[in-house]
Every structure is written in structure tokens, then in C-alpha cells.
Amino acid sequence: MGGNAWSHTGPYQQDLEVAFRQAQEETLARDNHGFVGRSIEELWRDPEWQEYIFNGGTCTVLDFPLMIDATDTDDGPFMRPLTDDEVHAWAPRGRPTYGEWDDALDSERLAFPDRAQGNCTVLYRDGRPEQIGYWGVTAD
Image (tube, rainbow, N blue to C red):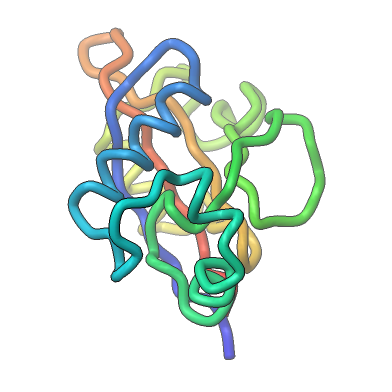
């Protein structure tokens, strides 16, 4: 079985790891996937959650226990921000809008990562950071 590709946006925070955690908390509040009353940290310590993620996943930021550094090459399941060079490859001005990001994903100028991996980047409106774009592929 191959993984399922997904994308969505979350709130902007200057610290991408803080933004990632906020996006996870908001996503979990909308749908706990049957794991009631648990934090992200508690979920990732639960073998049943891990099995749930690795055998289907949520197609959201919940599929990753943590964010790694943009230059880290470890395999997933991790969320990794793009490097500046990676952003410039599909958004030459280096400040992509939601539309540019969405078009780059649709046209495959911006690739989806391998299974059980996710990427993120800051998205801008009128030259100012507005949200974070997240995209990834489930582990299954």
C-alpha cells in the first residue's frame, strides 16, 4: 500500500515548532479520532495511536510526533520545514503566497515528501507571513 498525500494550512507563529504544535492542538480539537481526552504527547506515547497512524493515519499534522530541523535528513515520521533554497526553487521571491504554494503542489513543482513524512513552509499575504502550509504523506 502507498501513503495518501494531503495538504492544509495552519496558523502562523514566528517559531515554526510553536505553529506546528498549535496546528496539532487545533486539529485534535476538531477530531480526536476516537482517542478522547489526550494531548499530542500522550497520544504519541500510546502504542494504539502509533498503530493507528502507521496503518492509515489522519492525513493531518497529527501524523507526526515532532518537527525536525530543515537540514535534517532523517526519515519520518517527522514534520520538516523547507530550507530557503527549497522554497526559492518553486517561489523565486522566497515569500510564497497560498496560491503559489497550492499551484506548486498541483503542478508537482513542489514535491510531496516520502511516506510517513511531512513538510511545511510559511505562506505570505501582501509580503507578510500569514499562515503555515503543511503537506505530507501518510505511512500506510
